[in-house]
Image 1 (spheres, each protein chain N blue to C red):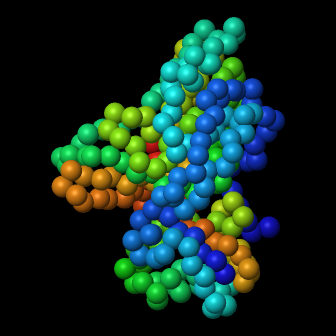
Image 2 (image 1 turned 120 degrees about the horizontal axis):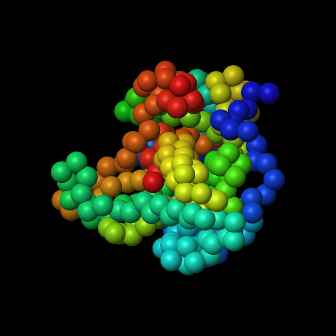
Length: 77
Length: 193
């Protein structure tokens, strides 16, 4: 599973990386990421997730070949 | 279907025109800037936004009012001197969402022209980071629609700014904290009112 992160998440993770674990949903993904870097826990709890340019919810079943984008709260403008 | 989007799919193509459509990939961003769609009202650019050129193209015989909002980089924030801002964006989704927001406003306020453009990359103090232009028959609609578009872009578009201060430090902005009130990271304050 490929992971892309943006903005402040780049302080904790590489902008793009790959996870080989079996991850079924966003809750599991969040747990894996917190295990990788516990400092990102609070930020990750306010992030949304997207696959194929659409937001996904926690019931979305992630697949091994998915590219998941992790989206912190917006601060554009 | 568990994949979700906050907004309904975009309706028919907008009649809005975005006259300035130049962009080049930004080496400091995760995603390259895609080729702009001339028919789409939203545009994200690594190059300076030409608000004069945009305004020049934002006239319509049915519009008695044209409103232009330019969001510009301030030289200070919360008591700290700001040298410049740097914007990051998840470009495909940002363009998709901004197009949907603009299209919704165009239909709601019967706009003749609606355009929104946002910078990515390094933006200097005094430069435009985001521009929204709305044109309608009367000023009240153009003002209301313009405010609606910029407010939703700031809350919802996956675009982030990093403030670079004169003392060498930097900080990512965290403008939208609606989830602390709504209790749902996918819901903004105005969606529960």
